Length: 235
Image (cartoon, rainbow, N blue to C red; front, top):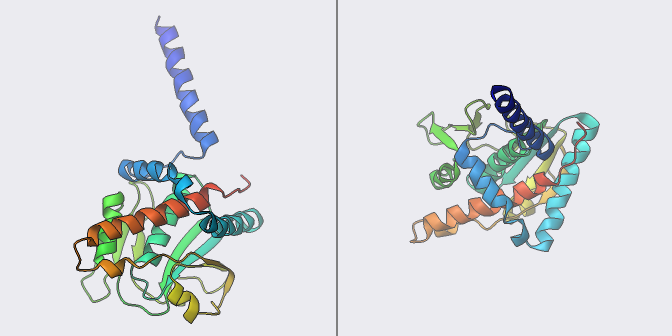
């Protein structure tokens, strides 16, 4: 009986390992973040067709870079690098881990710098990120964690041309129309993808403030996750 029980357990564990390997979802995300992304994955059918066209361009760019160079970099760009561009960067990093896609490094920047808005920070924390403010100046730095064994991302507002952002060979993801219009040329970019999102700032100080930030975070998470679900890289 012991031998049979051991065999059953072994087969069960092998089945789990095989399932994770074939699904590409063997990851170390925090459980809450993992659950959030699982729910976002179920909402792919709510993404408008025109948005999927741009998201497929993003996936194609990543697939091409990963297959030819083994790595790819993205900079999510908005005017102030305060809300949407940070959300894009952090959800892209979580999406890559969710699907087990190695070699993608995500950044964010603005056409000017301000500060990572605390309302956006709170929305991401509610979604499952662990975010800690590490400085107390006007443009504070935040340590962003996705899982116990995963690297920490340091988030703060910066221009897209400033360190630690790459200066060449990156894909520029424009997350607001204003930045897209004011930046006709993104120097150093090898691709430009337009993914504008409505600014949750419009709800600041209003009764629907929290709801608006949560909805924008969910929208960005769902779309970025969809793009990463389409990435095909050679193992």
